[in-house]
Length: 315
Length: 300
Image 1 (tube, helix red, strand yellow):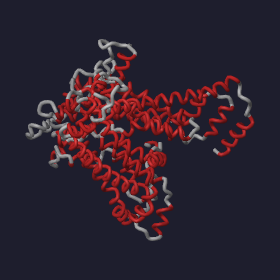
Image 2 (cartoon, rainbow over the protein chains, first blue to last red):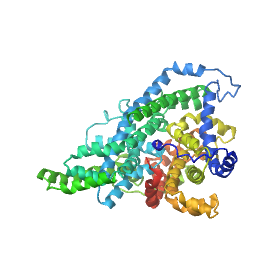
Image 3 (cartoon, rainbow over the protein chains, first blue to last red):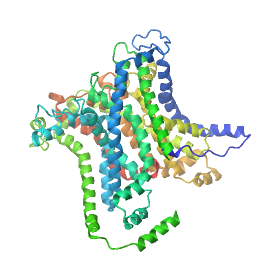
């Protein structure tokens, strides 16, 4: 997506300011509705949060706010929960990303090789089903799947296969050793079909003759994949990694729905800490919460820019 | 490119030699392995949904002993849940209102913007586009949440179901504009140009010529916005306090299996009712959806 970059600019006609103004008058009405919502509820909130982060704004006291400079930021940096929260989000991201790249790629390569077009489109449709279920409902469902009271996973492990008993059965969302893996499996399941579609779109652009001739030349499937398929999937893979890195580092719904607000749990990341401070704890210290949110966002942006740099320099 | 393909093809023909026995065995085994992996993936995808559906039609004893395939089916949970859980019908109504409004407004707005970004000589479109793209890489919904709460508070829209519609416009706005831009780009520029020479206004060109051509893209945008709004939890949970003003995802996310109206099969029934619209819409529109994805929504 990003790789396509900006559209080609229309040729500039110098000295015709009047024409440009007239064009603004006839074309911007189409853009203004989108920009109204985009600016009002997406762009302006970011600017406003930046401003709040420099004040001692407590929502519930409602008193006058004071400009306190970097106080919120120094508080946040010396707060062990902020550091822990960033660390926890980073660990989850590191667990999540490799599988997010790998599983859909394997499936896409396999689906792409299904000759029977009916079978191929059936696979696509089934794989896309989770993409039709909104995220929060996915998290609710997986919370049940992992539960030891009602969940089928532990039912199989304990009652059917007797791998565990009720005293040592895995606490998928409770134990800190497992919870990131459990959450990652949930996210992989959710994104499997949609990410596979991304890869399939890329695979569709590879001419089939390339494969045939390589195979006739005696190249192993492994070599065919690495020499022909993978290089053409790389741009898609990079966009996916960058996009998903951003979302994975800033997850909040799944942590609150599945982990709650216990500060010792591994699901209490910087985003949950921000929400907790802004809407729950004390008199809603939103100035401090804004600083926490912006520190997390800045950390994420640094990595995203670094990823861009990394991927650009190799091309 | 053409010459390269040509040489490759010639080489293909020249080098076609009988396969060795090992290669032949592999070529027979490979499709089986391929389908085995794909079917396994499909089972993994379908199992959780099948499980929750079975839970919703299990008799109570079967539900609480966790049997996957029940001894006794009991289809009464759906009626029980929808009439028994106090606010549930109101919650579903709330969800329908905000979702339909969000789908229609965002899609409308995204079609206009996509058109302006591709087929009109809109000054500043490069800038608009790059800001939209940048917003997709930043989780503004988390960072901006505090300000959105304050904005809604200033507008007097805290604890108002209808008020959710405003921030919901941005859930998938950037993606929608981007999808529409991709789809509009598949339409050759000559088409609107010639219509313009014939004297058609830009609005006429959009409604008469463009809309039928970008139909599949609009389906993708509508579905994307449906999913984003129908399941939205974070804003709904933050901006609404009263149970009867909440949307249904907030209610089900806070539900714990217990006794009476909140027994597990009832909750599972509510869940199935909750995911059904999305699955049905997908089932009926999948032909256009898949085509829309290919036409431009997924362009790398």
